[in-house]
Length: 465
Image (tube, rainbow, N blue to C red):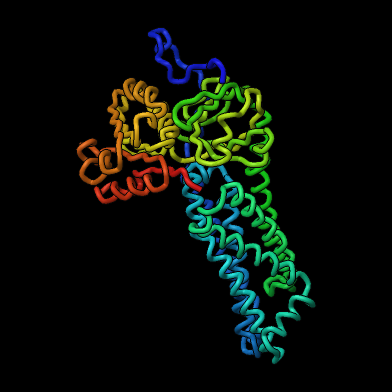
């Protein structure tokens, strides 16, 4: 710990209040039309995949022994592989898509799609094995042995499918919650390898490609483009941004029980386009932490040359930040998230946070215009858990808003269908922003829906794996 190089949220003198504060550039406004075009392109790609597969099988082949099973195997394989590419694209951090849907939204869609490619590819393997066995008038196990040992790339494709199945199993919520985040993250990275080793198998043996050089070229371009987007936005852009801003730890400051703020210093932070409510994936380049990036929200808008994140110790990585040394270099990915003022549709907003969710709420609040009259609800089990509350109160005051600090047990400080309209009488005229632990967010979202608040004005970000 050291003397603070910058006082985030400190009371300002009258002269300071008149002076426009230095801060980073605002993030670009979301463009739903571009995201819509991306969705349209994905749908068109699926349609093209179906058309190519359907027309690649002659009618005579379908009527032959084992023809229908082989055709079903080809169709499920092509659709499953295409959906696997869509899964990768959903988490490739394409900026104009991410700014509209947010990383939470994209991850939810990624998880919803995930069972389909794995199931379809498993069905692909089963149907082809049964189809070939019927054609050869052989047993299924015998035919499986021939496919694995005599057909090019089938063994590697089978290993890729097994790897995808393993990743699917550990991604099930009940299993994922039992794993350390670092373990889950490392295993999940093997999905890229599983898809890569399956590529040659699809091109060499797929009926839609054998004797169709143009289709093979188009499919190869689609795979190469997907790989290029991943390399660009998951690796290239973060590396370039980290080199440009050269962040280092300036100070670690205790904020409450198990909560610390890490204040960073860097170059050209006035050019770092970020909105209140967004987060970065932070990679601290020190022993034991350099190999993993964790998502933490900014707890204040940038004050060049400083940035601040505030973290609660809930795992090995977050707990380790309390002892990180000043001077430690940092690599960043982001900013990410659609939990920003750009999502707001109604004139005013209700901001609700519990626990460490106050970090995103605090920076979002700072980004709201003066006179916006927000209502802020802070939920905590005990007063010591209301971290950054002094800063939040100051920001609410200068935006002519109202703050309610709800402290106590869930029964004593409930936010439900009875208390929420009482605390916020004009709830029907406000957007609702909710941030905090997953269970808390789900509860508030459910309450808002029961009170007739439409989904398009409910914005939420959950702190969960």
